[in-house]
Image (cartoon, rainbow, N blue to C red; front, top):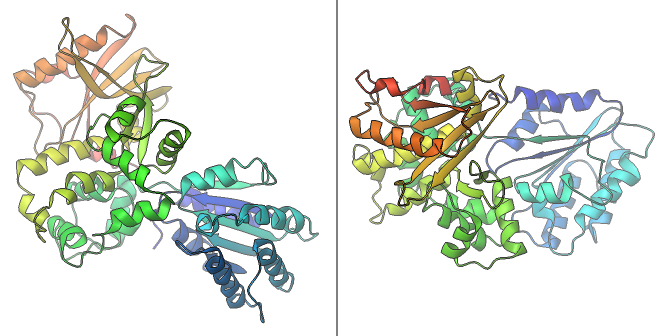
Length: 474
C-alpha cells in the first residue's frame, strides 16, 4: 500500500511520457520509502534492476552487478574487470531488449562507489556515450541512494560529464502527521491522534519503522517491543543507520551526541568545544552531510546575519535514542511502559513535541492563516546580563507584514494552564525580544498545544493558538 507520494509518483510516471531519454535521481533519508515508491510506481517492471552491496568491496560490487545482469537476461556474463566494462555489459543487455521504454533502476548507488572505482565516470560514459546518443530515445534511468550528501555532491552537483544531464530529481521527505494517520488507517491500527503524535515523536515520519507496529498492542507495548525487548527489531537501528550512511561515522555520531545535549542547538564553536573535534574542512563537510541527510537543521538566530548559524538535532528517532534508549541502564524490557506515567516521560514529551512542531511549519502557518504571506522561521536567544535575565524563543515566524509570531510549544494532554509564573515568563521573553526588533513590528504570542489553552485570568496574553489537530492537516 502506497500512502501519499502522489506528487512523486506523478513525477516518476511522467518520465515514461517524455520524448527524450530520462535520468532521474531519487534521494532521501534511509528507510524513508524510496525503493518502495519506485517499485510500486513501475509495478516492479524493470528492464534492469540492481542494488548496491552494503559495505561491499570493489570486487563484490562488480560481482553483484554481474548477477543482476544475469537475472535480467544477459546470459554467459562473466565478472567485469571494471565499471566501464560493467556498464558496457548493461548496454549489451538493453540492445537486445524488446522495443519500448526501458526503465533501469539502480538502488543504493553510493554503496557501489568504493575506493578508486570511478563508478561515476563509468556512469557518465554510459549515459552520454550511449543512452542519450542512440536514435531510440527510450531509456529511463533511475538512480537512488540513502546517502543524501553523496547523491548531492557526486550527482546533483556534478561538475563533470553529468553536469546539466539530469532531467529530474526527487528528494523524498519523511511522512507528515497527516500521512502517518493515513498509514495507520490503511493498516487497521487502532490509534488515536494522541497515540499517533507520540509515535511520531519517537519514529518520525519513517514508514519502515511504522511498518512494525502491531494493532493488538498499545503504544507503550509497541515501543517496548520495537526498542527494549530482548529481540527488539529496532534495538540496533541507531548504529546501523549511521554506519550504513557514512563511511567513517565516528565524527558524525560525535557531533550528533554533542547536539543531543542542548535542545536549542549550538553554534560551530560550541560544537567544536564540546565534541573535541578538530576544526577544518572535514568538520564542515560532516555538518553539511548531517544537514543534507535531515538529521540536523541549520538556522540563523534572529537579527544575526554573520556567525549566527545554529545547528540543532532534529531527527526524532536519534533524539529518542539519546534521551530514552540510552537511559535504559538496567535493560528493562518494559522500560517504556514502566516510565510512561512518570515526570521523566513528560519532560521527554515536551522536548519531542517541539521538534514535531518544527517539522510542521507549513501546517502551523496554515492554521494561523498566513500561508499566503511571505515569512521565514528562525529562533532567538540571548544570555542573561545585568539588564535582563536572558531569554530563549525556539520558534519565531517572521512575516513580511511586520508581524512576528512568537511561538511557544507546550505539551499537555489536558488544556494547557497558563499560571502566573508562566505568564510572567512569557511576557519577560517578549519584553526582552522586543528590544531587538524594529519598533513597527507587532509581536503575537502564539501557543501551540495538544488540546488548547484553559480559560483563566492569564489567557488574554495569547494572540493566537494552534492545536494538535491542526498539525494533522495535509
